[in-house]
Image (cartoon, rainbow, N blue to C red; front, side, top):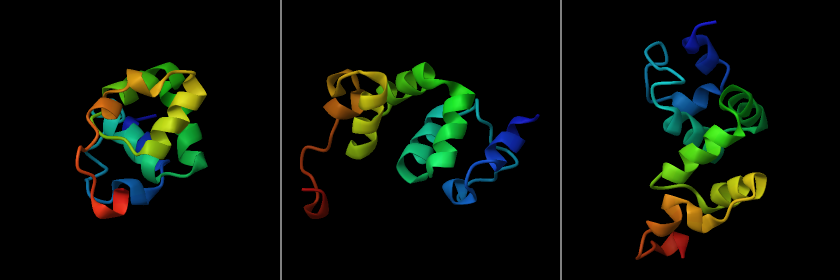
Amino acid sequence: MEEVNYLKKLSPSLFWDIDISRASMETCPQQVVQRVLEYGNMDDWRFIRAYYGLPRIVELCKQMRTLDPVCLSYICLLSGTSKEEYRCYHTAQSNPTLWNS
């Protein structure tokens, strides 16, 4: 099965801003993982977990500059890692906006 067909199995609302026919699960896996974590449903999560595997998802998340705090806690819980191991934990916005404080 082509990778485009894999992306079509995910919720269409996740990739509304890109041409899905040109996208790939392997070209930018961080974008796929981040969007599924932050905006996807459980079916989307199960799909990327089966496709990438939890160890690869954790490694991708560790490299992300931003990740929703709830998603970060979820990944830490599943993988048994600490928040300090993730780049997004150290590069958090120093002056949070009013709605994020």
